[in-house]
Image: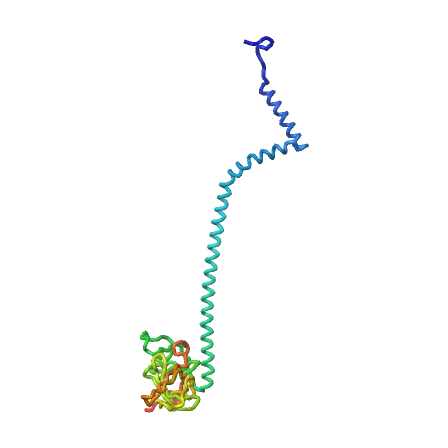
Length: 286
């Protein structure tokens, strides 16, 4: 029941009136904010209040972008690493090839100088194979009778005497190295001129049947004497490394090492000595 003086029915603003009122208020706020920046504090407060929520919404997208970028960078680094590794391998192969070519060039230069010093016709040949037996001191050359190589011809490299051709085939030749136990070379001590015999000793060489009073000492160089007419005189053969003079034997024990690269040279030179060349060029007797 209504109290005295209170109207029985009250009439509220209609929707159109409320819309007009709020529109006027909004326009007024827009004008005030545009002309006088009156609502800047309100805008800053709203941004500050909703900033954590904005970060929370953006976090999954930022994380996904970071992961995607990491994977792309990781893949790019893997590709670059693989390319660099391949280039490194190619550069290493080229460097090894250059080292091999340089070694072969040095060997060929020494062979040319040795050929000029000996004055003999010669044939350059490359080592084709070595026997599987580690105790066999023989190698096979890639040239034989087709290049004028015959059994008995000496074989040298740029540092000295390597051995002697023991078998000659049509397209290859077998060389017995100076370190073979059955191989002997007439030599002389370069310092004194004393003639001796040096034999192969497997990995090294040794002078046999040398009287204990002979003047020989470590460091002496042994060169071919040329008296056998097989090896040209003056070819370096070995270097004396140890001299023992036992009291219970009339002969000294002399150990030597070959001066030539019997176990490392790849290119060798077969010398055509004068008597071999004469036999090769002489006409056959009927």
